[in-house]
Length: 255
Ligand SMILES: NC(=O)c1ccc[n+]([C@@H]2O[C@H](COP(=O)([O-])OP(=O)(O)OC[C@H]3O[C@@H](n4cnc5c(N)ncnc54)[C@H](O)[C@@H]3O)[C@@H](O)[C@H]2O)c1
Image (cartoon, rainbow, N blue to C red):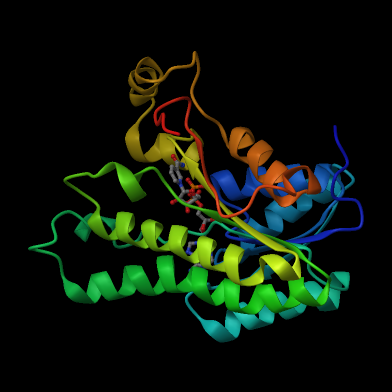
C-alpha cells in the first residue's frame, strides 16, 4: 500500500456511508489522520473503529452539512484533533426527499428547497470552511462527489442532477480562485457503485443488468472511488485541478 498521506489530515464530509466509508478507510491506510463526519454519528464511530483496528488514525464527528454551525465545528475539530487540514472530501448525500424528485412540473417546491439546501448548499458550506484552513497550511485539495446524473440528462431526478451540476461549477471556481494559493479542486463522478445501501435499494438482481451495460467485466465498488479519491487528494494528483473524473466502468466516454 502506498503511504501518500503520512502527516496529512483529511476531513471526510459524509465519511461513513458506502462510498465515504471506503474512502475514509483507504486514506487512513495510506497514513492520513481522517476526521470522519457524518449525520449518522454511530456510523461514523463504526468507521473510526474499523480504521483504528487496522492501525490507522481517525476521529468521528456528527456533521450536518446543511447546518453552517455544524460544518464550522467539524472543520474546527480537524484543527483541534489533528493540528490542521490538508484535504477535504465532500461526499454526503441526503436522499430522504428522492421520492419527490421525479418531475419538475409536479415537484413540491419545499422539497426542492430542502434538497438543494443540503445536497448543494451544504457543499458550499464545507468549501467555505475548509478552504481557509487549506490556505493556512500552504495548500491542499478539495474533492467533491458528483454523479453522471449531472450531465447525462434524465426524465427523472432533476433536483439531484441540478445539485450535482452546481458542484461542478463550484469546484472550477475553487480551482481558479485558490489555485495560486496551493488549493486544487476536483470532482469524482461515480457510476453505479455497489454497496449494502444500493443493494438494499435496488435489489441484487439489478447487479447483473448493470455489469452487462458496462465496458468492463465487473460492478463498481467503493474501493474504486477510494483509489481515485486518494490520487486526487494526494500529491500524485498535484497537476490535476478543475476536473470532473468519471469512475464508471466506461459508462461515460468523453474527452
Ligand atoms: N452509490 C452509487 O451508485 C453512486 C452513484 C453516483 C453518485 N453517488 C454519490 O456518491 C456519494 C455517496 O453515496 P453512497 O452511495 O455512498 O450513499 P450513502 O447513503 O451510503 O452515503 C451517504 C452518506 O451521507 C451521509 N449524510 C446524509 N445526509 C447528511 C448530512 N446532512 N450531513 C452529513 N452527512 C450526511 C449519510 O449518513 C451517509 O453516510 C453521494 O454524493 C452520491 O450522490 C453514488
